Amino acid sequence: MHEPYLDALKALADPERAAGMRAYHKIERDYLGLRNPQIDALCKEWRSELDVPSRVAVSDALWRTDIYEARVAAAKLLTQARLRPDDAEAWALIASWCADFDSWAIADHACMAGQKRLVADPTRLDAVEAWTRSDHMWTRRAALVITLPWTKQNNPKPEEIAARERILGWAASYTVDQKWFIQKAVAWWLRDLSRHDPERVIAFVDAHGDAMKPFARKEALRHLR
Image 1: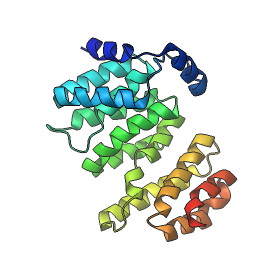
Image 2 (image 1 turned 45 degrees about the horizontal axis):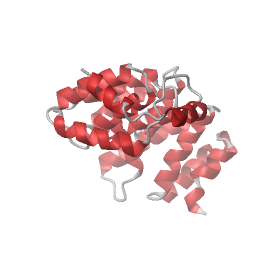
Image 3 (image 1 turned 180 degrees about the vertical axis):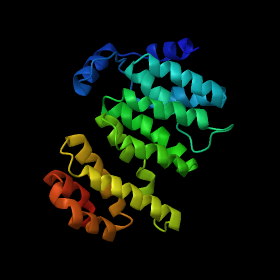
Image 4 (image 1 turned 180 degrees about the horizontal axis):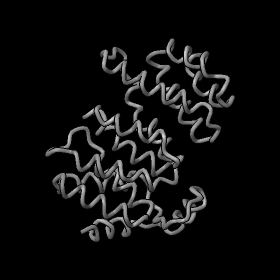
């Protein structure tokens, strides 16, 4: 089912740029050398043509190719605030991708799609909490990247405050993990939250900052100086 969509990506391939991308990402997989706007344009066209079940099927097939641009396109096909009919299959597919994460770029595109599905149904945070206990570093990181919408409310409702505090609890447990990408994810979450709730970020850093790497503390407080 994915062949016409994969062919459309391949038709835009730039081998020279693909070689540069392989060197930059440092992950051994096929790269086509496309730019994000090119993938965006194709996915916009495909979204207008495909119903949600078809988009889920195409996204699944594209992801399985393990081609960089195909995985990015798979995520972009499912990045939409509202999916009708029921988006449960879309969420299940996005969540299943976590086990395959091996680089920040693909993971972040997939998490962007997942953010929409979490906001649509916050009860899915229960599933995300299980990711925080994973042995897979990229899955643990995804738990913070996919929950970034909870950093952005200026006037959160009580249930949003509760969710925010829940996620901050995950972040606190991460501060003792010295892996760069985990520390960066904690800092990212706090930095974004600092624009909307600076006092809470200061309190977090006061309580847990000693366990954080210096660059992560600095990044978390970047907008508060």
